[in-house]
Image 1 (cartoon, rainbow, N blue to C red):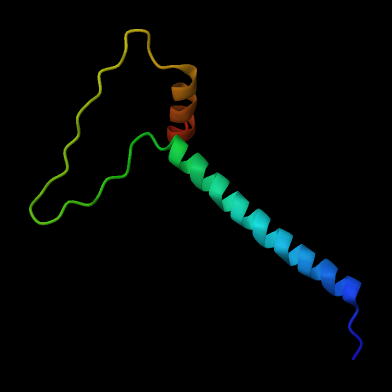
Image 2 (cartoon, helix red, strand yellow; image 1 turned 90 degrees about the horizontal axis):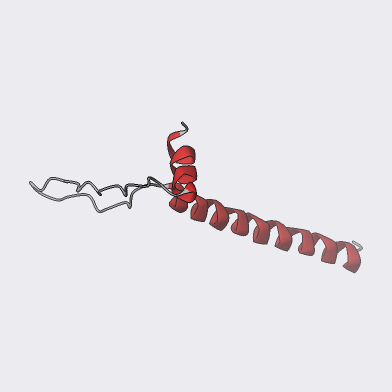
Length: 77
């Protein structure tokens, strides 16, 4: 059996780049998902505890353009 070193190196390079770019895409999508999410994920209450929320007062001038873009992507409106 003849093994071509250049061909093997190209395949190894391709597989390495595929794994690296897949990991990079995963981390970028994870970061975008956490940036778009309008609230922080909290732990699930245990026992008889209930989850309550505190409403944040809005500023009189409204939302910044970045916050509006985040809400647009999160709610799709």
